[in-house]
Every structure is written in structure tokens, then in C-alpha cells.
Image 1 (cartoon, rainbow, N blue to C red):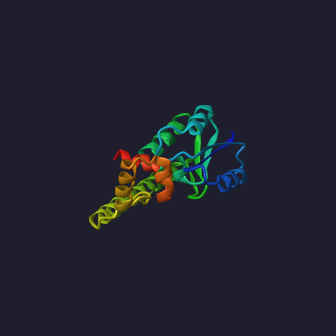
Image 2 (image 1 turned 90 degrees about the vertical axis):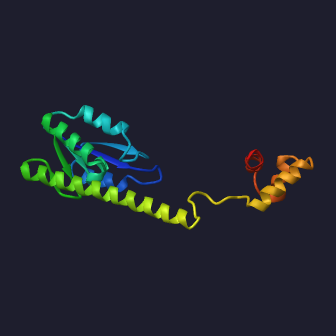
Image 3 (image 1 turned 30 degrees about the vertical axis):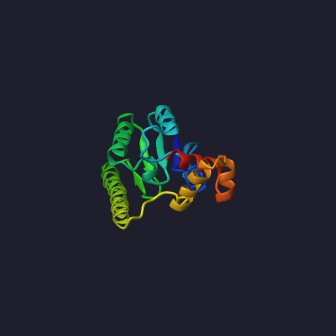
Length: 183
């Protein structure tokens, strides 16, 4: 029997240290980690690797349930596959352990709450974007060139100036000027 760890962070800027430390303290003899991979992504190379290499008697251990996945169905499918292969599952933060029926029941409940949290975040984000759009506010990076400057760029181009010179005059890059001239 071996404790095998799996860690994941969604962006490359995030740090795996907390998860790796906790998995090490839990006795993980080997840890697989996906960095810069969303939990909702279907392709997680290191998760695939660890699932392929687990053997009967091993215990797949994660720092937190949402590291395995945020989709309830996927989490439960993975755990069911592990159970069929006689591989245990443990989540350190939630204190879940699939050894026994109570651990499995708690895992199902926790996975449902993780899915609820994700769905609530998505719903709130959509509502916020809709409200912002009604107030004529749109997400994304602010424009570098306002409407007046865009008109000026077109007029300067018509006078024969090149994009580099126009960009210097307006304080933006040549590529930005090309985008506005193309539109």
C-alpha cells in the first residue's frame, strides 16, 4: 500500500507548495501535480498519469476535494473507478477517506457542495456581467485609443503618415494603429 498524492493549481502563477507540503506530511511517497490546469479541464496530464499508475491497495490523496475536480459527476466517477480497482481515496482538508460507507457518503455530499459552489459562482458572474452590460459597461481591457483619437489616426493616415509615426503621436504602438485603421 502506498499513499500517492495529486496536486493542482489553475494558473502557472499559483504555487503548489502548500499542497505538496500537506501531501508530504500525509505520507505521500510520490506526488503528481498539474500546474496551470483548470479543474474543469478535461485534459489533465498528471491526473491521467496518476490514475493509470495506481495499484490495488494504494490511496490517492489530495489536499482538497476541488483539486480532483469541481464537477460532481467527474469526482464521483473517479472515486468509483478507484473503488472498483480497490484503490482508496483521501481528501486531507475535508477529512474524507473512502474506507468504509460513511467516508463514501460524505464524499458524495462534499462533491455535491463543491459543484453547488462552482455553479453559484458562475451564476453570480453571469448576473454581474448582465447588470454591467445594462449600464453600458463591458469587461475586458480598456481601449488605448478613444473615438476621437481613432478619427485622428484615420485622418493622419489619409495625409500620408505611416502607422509608426501616428502611433508615436498618439502614444500607442504601431500594431494598435493598424487595428484601428483596419476597423
